Image (cartoon, rainbow over all chains, first blue to last red; front, side, top):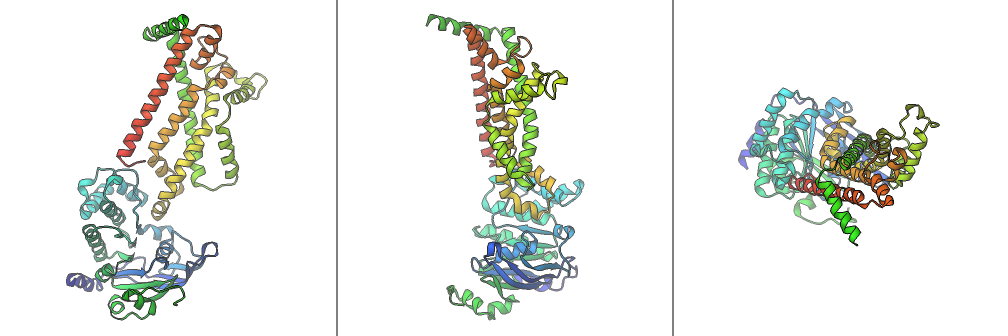
Length: 259
Length: 235
């Protein structure tokens, strides 16, 4: 634990500037068919450290992540990267890993090859990047295996390796370790921390408070489609400023009329 | 009963001796139906994939049309192509009627709706699964199409085999536009129809047995393919 916090300390002072940040969401509303899922969500994500989105089921975490990444269009409000809307170039410098990894019906290496080609990485460089990414994820020995016969933990490691092989400036992760065993979870957390050290901004959703304590430098806490608070991780876990977060940390159920 | 037994032994004799007339008919059948399947897959798979991932005006109507065409009786397709290719028809100048080319055209028309409808289903199911990942990679529409077609390759081979099955088995379309001319447009199904009505059961039976053999081979290939796909989790 101490180790991790030290890396975070080093992290705050990294010199490399992130080309995409700050990321700002301005009064986002997402309400398909009149059903409000997100409303009046504003936040700013700056470079450095891991931003962790916490909240109970249905709080709108996944929708927020998709709005930020551009997979969904907000019905109101806007997402701004360094003050401007996302261009194709900006979108290509982000990557996302889903809770249930979407793997192509190809070999492990071919999954990375496909993503690198889509990102416009020249052929000569692809082989090197594939090897590097698989090596780092500890799945180099599986390179030739069909991706979809891997175990759940290996599949998610592959999905993270594929995202990281793109060398994104921002990586979004939607509960990447949900339903994985501790060994796989540790492997994925190590990959995430290494990417963070390299200056890749991590924005990730988690259900797991222990994981949030291990990784986060900043917490965005969501409650019923709104942001209840955005705080430094240390102060959040010591004393959350919102009642919703206090209840969540104390493990108290909040009933719909208890607002 | 004795007659039937004789017919069977004659039929096996024809097959085992690789009778030249029999071989000619079988080869023409395969040539026509394989060409038609290839052409129908080229058209139908592009069209079906496009219908699966693009929204364009008239898409709904096209969907209903292809689904309706799937069950079209071959004789009706034969009639339509006959009218197009006959001397009085708009394509009469090419003098294609009663040629193997006419038969390929008719079977292509017959198989294309099947290839289109099945491909649309396969690709749109896969698209649902891949959509967010591919959009996250900022893939353009053509690359998306390419990715989906490649990843659906096992299912698409199944589609092609289903199309070939329909082509090789139909008689209505090829008999109208081909005319069942000996040494020119006689294929297995038209020969069976003719020989049976002439009472020459041996040749008809031999061809029938070969058709059954082809059908078994195609289905065995399908099963082997599905086994491979399952082993790689590529279904």
